[in-house]
Length: 206
Picture 1 (cartoon, rainbow, N blue to C red):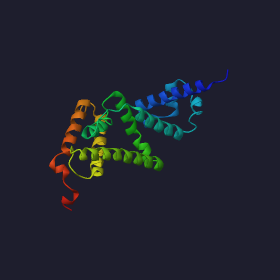
Picture 2 (cartoon, rainbow, N blue to C red):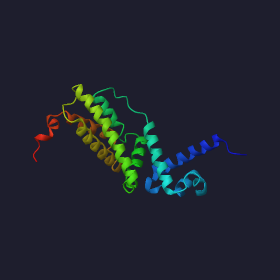
Picture 3 (cartoon, helix red, strand yellow):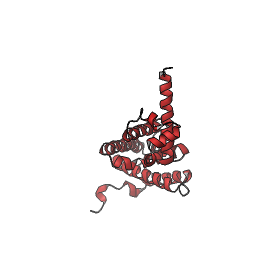
Picture 4 (tube, rainbow, N blue to C red):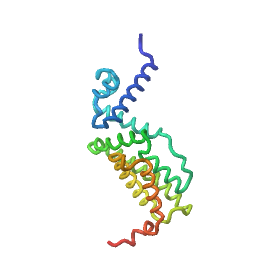
């Protein structure tokens, strides 16, 4: 009996879930055709129909990570500083699903750094994330919830804080449980409103 389109789509969904489970358990370093085939209960020969080479599997996994991240429910942050807080909370590994996504994302950095095209793509993604934060921060400034300052510079600092906190929470989850991550984020946001944080770059020595 010939395979139907529904059979093909169902198989692709099975493959996607197997790829995701391998990524969640082993990261990009453990992503191989053999590992995905074992997770799927299939042969590597079947998988070569979808991924003729390891690079095809990596590209698919990165696309899958993007789609999973984009489809994850987001917090309703309102506007102003609450919107900034909600956007930053959405990045942190506060749930099991968010932790898996962050572990996979961080494990993919090594792969991206060794591939110029992927490296450029990651740089673009992080720039887009900074732009989103910049716009939210500018809106909070207009509402008087944050002091005046270069919103792009503040967004770059906020992204750097987030990435550092993500890495610490992944390596030491017992020291950075969800409630502590949230507390640290709130401390950081409070510091943005302090007089020292609103100093202009021209006031620095150099």
